[in-house]
Length: 550
Image 1 (cartoon, rainbow, N blue to C red):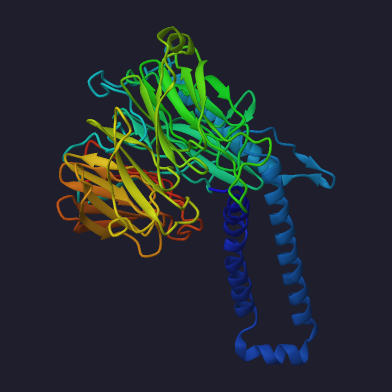
Image 2 (image 1 turned 90 degrees about the vertical axis):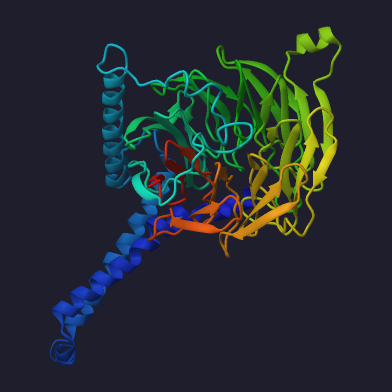
């Protein structure tokens, strides 16, 4: 996303949702009252015999609406000035700030619930925390579950989906859930983003995967409230640590965060001058993430003195930075395989790079550079990198999460040399590609900016089938692939289940709130398949768990 787009569109959830959405209800209420007090057959008589009555009613209604707009505006300003988790002033120059008092009460209830939950689930405080069985996670759960970006720990893939539970943060009803979820099969980890212009705010949380019950939620560090979160959480193979980036595209000074997965305790944070929309990858004790650039909207250039971006590596156990390497706009989510980091370079970069993950000292001792290869791409490579066998797969295009561009390709590179093995043509990919390529067997599936899902032969790149999911919105979220099915989520909130063999549509489900169908087109939380359930976030409808009948 670009800075001016975010600042313009960010107004919508606060002003439209919290203000204008209530106006029809108020008007309807006033009309109803007038209808009861003055039936149509008596209205003319009232005006003739008592002309002062309509005048008084009109003045009262005007004062009520004016007062409502005034305090609504004050509430919006107060919310911008006192974000979630920040200290709240309870008085103003005119007296008590009742909206602030109400918010503080909600926060207090939230803190009490969190403290009670923590006490009940920590050693010495009651029931022990459920941790995953070692067999459930034999490797880290990263963005889209694995380096194949399949989004699935369930080979069968459920169908005939029914809502099992839905969860929204009760303290932030307008939060968006842009991140893809992480799970160990018992716990479900996610993050949220709220737009309060000119700022963004976020939270990281853990839910019971079976019931949707909140286990913990954290929205601030000693340094202040978290920024809005687009990055998706990564879970270490032992289930102990959760790592995520913070910041939306216009955010500066964002950090990488590491939590104790069982309790939500913030263990460390690594500050940067950038935003971290990239989702971290984990191998052993090392976590790697991309720190993206903030470009000017008019020319997509980094302002003078701005940082064009870098890749950051940190030791999970200590929170100590291992190394950083300059890469232009690495908003792509990296893949870590056998000591090599593969990541896309976005705006002003147009490339995929392979980096050694050894320490600077090790590289110097071995006489090696960190960069192994750099392969140019025809468009910015913003999509997450997929690694399967000897191939590195990546989608790229001339669009972003706000605007879908008309051009895009999927590329397959040789993992050792970066040589292009195949590249799709314009006939199969007809728009920008921000979705990671999801691989299942010999089929590579990708969402496209024209609202379609395309299946490609993994070895040749030949298009196998294409299915339109939405006529109005792109498919920017990663698809989930099982043995027989594909699960795709369009940006306007439609979850589609497709037949993997031919792309035939099996069923569709709407995940956004029907009263707020999605103002920004930012339903990009890619579906995750585990234990016969589909988990996904939405822009306006919260977190969903859908249970399959088979």
